[in-house]
Image (cartoon, rainbow, N blue to C red; front, side, top):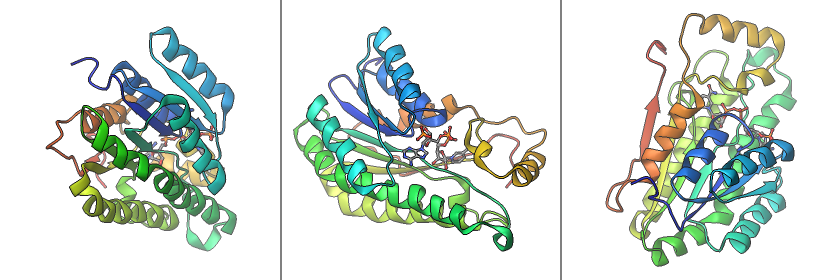
Length: 254
Ligand SMILES: NC(=O)c1ccc[n+]([C@@H]2O[C@H](COP(=O)([O-])OP(=O)(O)OC[C@H]3O[C@@H](n4cnc5c(N)ncnc54)[C@H](OP(=O)(O)O)[C@@H]3O)[C@@H](O)[C@H]2O)c1
């Protein structure tokens, strides 16, 4: 069971830290060759080296997925270098919370550009390869896993545009799921609660402070916990699709 993904190829966006990095590690231990996609090349190279040292195969694609041409190139170069594409983890994202009344519009643009458009660009480029993988691979199934958030299920005061992007990911995923079900391309959405990663560090200081207060005393999830969910999704038998996983820290109420 330890090498269920041997012979397959997985592309992970946002693999340079947090959930993406943890997901890349776990898929590599399952035997998948991994295409590591993000902007911080040094971090991707460190991860690729660690995976390689443990006997895995990893290639680095320095990519800004908000750029349509770069996103497509990352997918096409992965397929050219690794021969196929069975699994895509659309994980790259940014969370810039705070009241709408004081939000710099640039923050809203960044969230829409990455959380929605970047995910769409990668998906559009990857779909033909996933369909082909589901037809030709020994597993006869392919996986597209989109990382949304609890904010894709519950919209809260102060999370307006982040929630809009994550609700968008859920809506997009469900429509795609129906469209590709008959072709054995499974489309899944993962909706984590608070996870201990770099995500919150990109917010303005005053917003970060408020967010810290909200989760004071809550034991956060680890990136590995979400990687574990992703691992579960992509290693199910062909007949079984995990459509949606909402996963919160035990103590997180909302
Ligand atoms: N942490 C949480 O509490 C939490 C909860 C719910 C959902 N999520 C979701 O989980 C996903 C991963 O977040 P995380 O918590 O692991 O945070 P993270 O450590 O900040 O990871 C974000 C990743 O996105 C990448 N990224 C940012 N801009 C990019 C761009 N333009 N092109 C390509 N990659 C880009 C970053 O890499 P580079 O900077 O190197 O490009 C990084 O690898 C996000 O979609 C987030 O919304 C997180």
